[in-house]
Amino acid sequence: AQRVTQPEKLLSVFKGAPVELKCNYSYSGSPELFWYVQYSRQRLQLLLRHISRESIKGFTADLNKGETSFHLKKPFAQEEDSAMYYCALTNSGGSNYKLTFGKGTLLTVNP
Amino acid sequence: DVKVTQSSRYLVKRTGEKVFLECVQDMDHENMFWYRQDPGLGLRLIYFSYDVKMKEKGDIPEGYSVSREKKERFSLILESASTNQTSMYLCASRGGMGYEQYFGPGTRLTVT
Image (cartoon, rainbow over all chains, first blue to last red; front, side):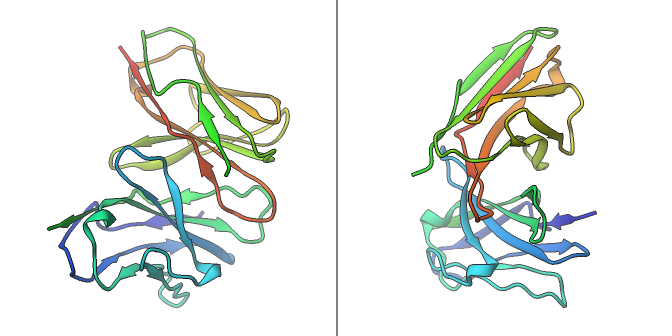
């Protein structure tokens, strides 16, 4: 069974500090990993996916298959980064495109 | 831009009522999904549909059913609402070659 673990429910940092949101997964096949974000009073939206290897809003995430991790990082946090972040996984070879989500981490960036 | 709309932002129902939550997408997506979002539990998949009239149970289907008569519309039905179904319900759709799911704004359902 596939599982996504986000060990921190809450994370609080100061503006300008580095931030890392942790995500670990368990999956026997070849996973596709994603980070979704939900800003206050907005809908859930895709932040980034591991396969594209891009940086969005200064965030990056590297898939580490050895440690089965996909941590989200940003070197200098901004107040507008305050949001709920979800890590998610799907089977890259699957045909139903189901996503398994972690329980989420609420990031607060203080001024 | 993909647009996913949900029929209500807020809904209050009584225990035992039959409840319909509607979701519509305008991008001709094949796949549609219903989740519930609860604090500390994240998003949990209730049902999904990979084509018209095709559906499959997710992780927590008990107490729910779905209907997809047209490609653009996916309905979630609570046959007899109970207080433990008080939650935020999110609809999503996906299509084409990518894995990205596009979410609606959510319906906050309160069952009293």
